[in-house]
Amino acid sequence: MPKPYSIDLRERVVGYVEAGHSRRAAAAHFGVSVSFVVILMRNYRKTESLVPK
Image 1 (cartoon, rainbow, N blue to C red):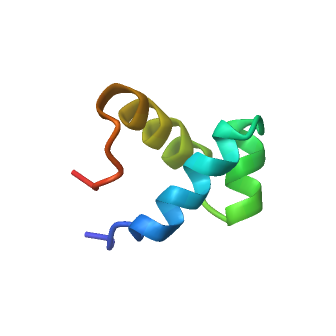
Image 2: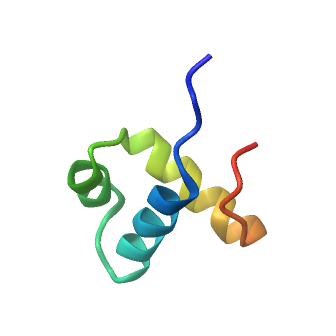
């Protein structure tokens, strides 16, 4: 099973999207998958938490 992304990376991705960039742009900028960003943002908006499941 792969290791979860760090809280630091998660904070930077959320900040980037919250600053007005698209999820696709955030994925390209940070070198992660689009699905990771989409799921991260969905969970963040629902729970206000960045902790991996």
